[in-house]
Amino acid sequence: MGRKVSGEATMGELRELEELLRKDPDLRYKLSVLSSWPQPANSEEWDHKIDNALERHLHKMEMTLPSAELPVKREGRNIRKVVSLLSVLVLLLGSYCVYLLANKAPLKGDKKAMAAIFTRDGSRSKAQLPDGTEVWLNGGSRLTYNPDMNNLDDREVTLEGEAFFDVAKNAGKPFYIHTTKMGIKVLGTSFNVKAYTQDQTTEATLITGAVEVTLNDGLERNVKLLPNQKIILQHSNGNKLSKPNLVAGYKVETIRSNQPDSMVVETAWRDNFLIFDNDKFEDIALKMERWYGIKIHLGDRLKNYHFTGTFKDESFPEVLEALKVTTTFHCRIVSNEVFITQ
Image (cartoon, rainbow, N blue to C red; front, side, top):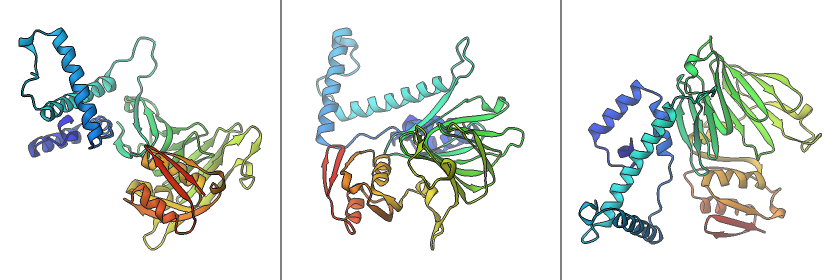
C-alpha cells in the first residue's frame, strides 16, 4: 500500500494488492487513510525544509551511532534518493500503524474498540465498511464505527460532516447513523447526510429506499422519508429558530435535479462537482473552505448576496472570477487565507 501511494508500485504489485483488497474489504479503509494524506508541494521552500529536516536527522544519527554504522554518509549522498527512501519508509510505517490501530484488542473494561475514517478540508474520499456498506466522505468529515459490526446486533456509525451512504442490505441488522441533531435508521438504501456542527442546519437526502429520521433537537420526533425527499433540521438558538419558515424546526421537501443531466445538487459532490443553487455568499464561503482547504474572511455586506453556478475541476481563483461576473468584490489571498471585501 505504501508503494502504491508513493507511485512506485509495479504492475505486478498493483495486481497483487487489488487481489488482497478483493479478499479483505477492510483493507480498503487502511488504503483510503494512506491515500488521503496530503502530498507535499513542489517548491523551493519545501525543498529547503526537506534538506534542513534531513540534516537534523543525520546529525542525531551521528551523535548516536559510530561512523561505520551510519546508514547514510554525508559525502556524495543524493538527497533526493534519500528523501524518496525515507518517504517510502514513512508510508510503510504508516500503513503498519493503521493496521495495528484497526486490529488492536480492546483494553480491559472497554466496551468498544472504535475505528475512524476522516477527510481534511480540501479532500474527498471513499471507503468500504466491514459490512460492505460504501461511504463517500466530503471535506472536513469524520466517521467512526465499530470494526466488529458484523458480529453485533446492529450496525452503527457516528458522522460529523457530510457523507453519502450506499448501505449493504441486511434485513436482520438495521444500519444507524448518529449525528448531533438527528439519527437515521435504514435497512438498505442510498442517501446523503450533511451534519457539520458549525452549519445552521442538518440535512438528510434520500435517493433510494426508505429511512426513518429521529430528530433529537430537544423534541424527539420521527419522520419517514420517501425517495427524492430531503429533511432540513434547523439548529435552534436557545428557544428561537433563526429561520421561522421551518415548521416545528424542520421541513421536508422534494429534491430538484439539474437539467438536462438530471444531476442531484445534494449528491453532486461525489462526482467532484461544486454546485451553488441560489446560495448565500456566507454559505458558499463555508463550502469553499471545505472544498479547497482554505480559510475565507468575508465582508459583512457580501454575506447575503446569492449565487448560482456549477463547477468541476476549476481552481479557487477561477470560481471567484466566475462569481465576479454578477457581483463586484475585491479579493486578497495571503498564504492559506482569503479576504473578500466589497
